[in-house]
Length: 308
Image (cartoon, rainbow, N blue to C red):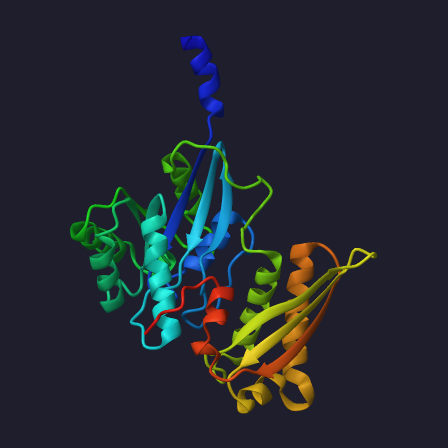
């Protein structure tokens, strides 16, 4: 019986949900992409880009780690803001363990202080991840780690630079050891449970923000209307970019349609790399007034519509 157990032990699988909690722009999406080894979440210079719980899936040895990339936690002002913050905290409470991300350069500022105070009520094991350590001197990093651990007991502390991958392997190994025993919940070759149509919309949305991050407000969204796999193995994708005003539609189109052509070219290139087949992408821009108050739009993004 003992010999049998020892033979089986190495093949026993582990699987669990790991929520990444932190302020906007702390690097959660970049960390998900670094852990997975592929691009599964939108990464932007603007804050509040991740709206729904997009999961990246990591296979490490005999463990499957399902990463819940929550919206950055900030002080909500609009209805959409409140939905995003509510989603972030529900993701933390529903996960098996929580990684609290701090920006090494920002330290424990007002936003980080509020997060540390509230995350104390989450019952799961918590891991402190200090990101962007390449931008800060070692003495400051050690002081930050100590200050955060004095506010609440973290099971472990990691110092990483998600953008370069420094320290990410150690974090991945540890998460694989900590997630609870259990069968895999997703096929081994699946990187994300976000459908490809949603991922395609996210990629186009990222290109819009990169191109128009100063001119265009956050009340814009992208929906994938058609996804056709053709006989020649290529994919035809039609997407609609929704904005709230005609003036915003003109910004997205650009003079002579130059801006939307550039956005489409960038998005098509990245989609072709991810899918491994030629992509024919067609973009349309429409005005949808007050979409931020439409419950159906929230459901499409995986968010719960706040009543107030």
